[in-house]
Length: 421
Image (cartoon, rainbow, N blue to C red; front, top):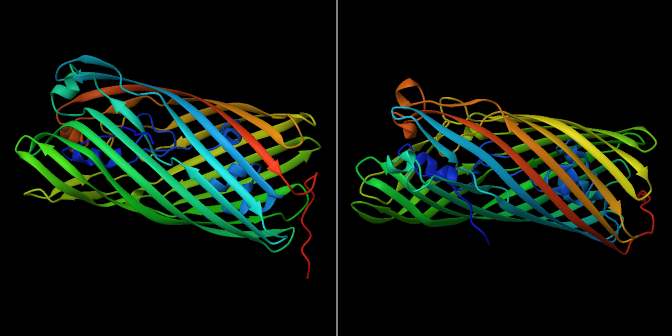
């Protein structure tokens, strides 16, 4: 297991919670991680809730309808973010790149029991990554932000029921572990503090439906429920160490809608929309210290819009590309130096190669560029955690993903399952 970095706060402690799932340069709004599929990475995840790959089950478990026999998909994504922070006042200083590179793994397994029932299992890191200010940083020495480490790992067992060639439904459970380490932030009364190695296990559900109203058309709707984490661990302060609990750290519900449409032989158009209920992420309270510490986030809901396509060059090689626009839950009122997140554009390309009848490979690449980002001091309407600091951030991300797919059993060609009545 690896850890990921996040922030501590005053309201800054607000950062402490973000840490539980933040990414230095968020890749799915705030601190979620979208990098769960090399196949999807290649077209900016357009249409993933409709199907296309075993990893589509992360967005919609009903896409397991495509499984024949036993299948697996092992994914590794390498995320190389850049987030250059400049302090404009009260003391101008370039803080440099606060983002940290990290690998993100994911694995999927599917097994068709019979012509109606399919079982699946996904293992993912849905939230995380890291930010870090240098030890001589003005932001760190002033107690605004330091090091943030956040790690999550989730297991998602699923059962899908295929009524016929046209309709599949699925439900599943999510068991998620979260671990957080936050350092270098000033808290009222307690001084510069650190939430050290705090963790929790939370539970949620997934559900989905896949429709195939006509040949060449696939429509999917997937849901991942919110997961409530009560993070527990030691809060190390200048007046002592306290065992605290971050009550009500609720990660958002997500709804994904996807479309895959065959336009002509060998060419398919894909499109997707995703909504995340980040507005649930409001105020969390650290309890267990001599005084309760409220952490204010006040996030807004986020949206993701993607359009892509794929083309079969020959029976063994498929190429794809996509573009997406993501609307962040962060704005000037809640954007902290811990997480200088903003709306961004995605530009992606990828390919799949069928090496043998049983083995294939996916690769995907995305370049993400964020809008110009302001970090607003508290007195001007920014979060309390920013204190008197005014700044800007310039962010971008390179992501490279690869996957190995294996198929065993089932028909040699994937023909539709015919329901028997």
